[in-house]
Amino acid sequence: MGRGSRGSRVRGSYLGGHDAARICGVFPFGAGPADTYAHVVHGTRAPMSPRMLRGLLFEPGFMAWVAEQRGVAHERDVFLVDDEVPFFAGSVDGVEDGDEVMHEVTTTTVRSRHLWGVPGTDDCARHKWVQAQWYMGMLPTLREAHVWCFLVDGDEDPLHYIVPRNEVAIAELRERCEAFWYDHVLARVPPLAGVHDSDAGETLDACFPHATQAVVDADAELIAAAESYAGARAALKEHEEAKDTAGARIKALLGEHEGARWPGGSVSWKERSIGTKVNWEQVAHEVALKVGFDGAAFNGIVREQTFEARSVRALRVNVKGIK
Image 1 (spheres, rainbow, N blue to C red):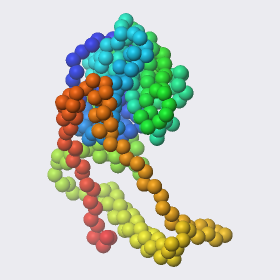
Image 2: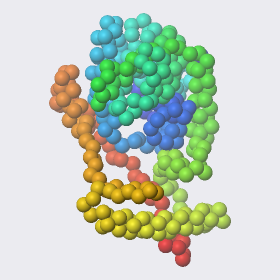
Image 3: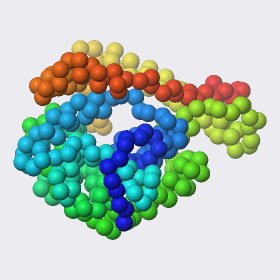
Image 4: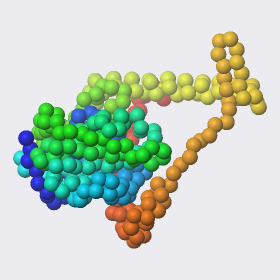
């Protein structure tokens, strides 16, 4: 089993807790292991999102609240480096004195409540369960992880889960992640599982973020794929135009009526709310001030986490005779 120690933070040269969850296929955001491959091999970073900014600025205050609730001294933001596997590492939100209990805190919204099970058990979100085992695998004195989740737009108290150390899971997790490092990262072989699926585009975008080689002569397989793409695009355009024309006709016939019905179906044309939008940066600013961050410190964090978004490769297909 792994042995870990507190180390210096390094970027892009290790597998962390999020990567372990991606490699296991339980991370609920992004393109899974392809994101890990793109980050480690190509150095790509996801652009800052409201979710990421919310966590960056809320979680320090949340961790302070957890420490107060527990009444036990904590070391916060502990970066662990595995002594046996040099590319295993990661940052733990808090470790209690004695190195037997660790804490992970996160924030989410009501939309993601379904990922979280019954509080008081170990049934936290699956990716957080994997992250907890990942860190416990690096620090063998840890016997349990307390995972806390705050629904920022809900009315529940913070959700609290206790995840016991699981040696079998830790061993399997470390084996899978070590295999990923040698089979994909060092071998420079993108994880292309699902390449034939219709939703594989995001995975391939992450694995091949840059065009580094010149145009090649197409083989028969590529030509067939391009012709299939162009044909599907043309059919989709035709159907979209027919749908839009029929939709406009329905609206013209309904006028000010909110709908119509008949024995075989119904149509409606009602007003609906477009929802609300939270200014997370301003909310985080207010929270930061309340927990002791001054404006300059807040702005410094925002500047540090602001970077150019990665470029996106646009797919364009041109087949003679098919528009």
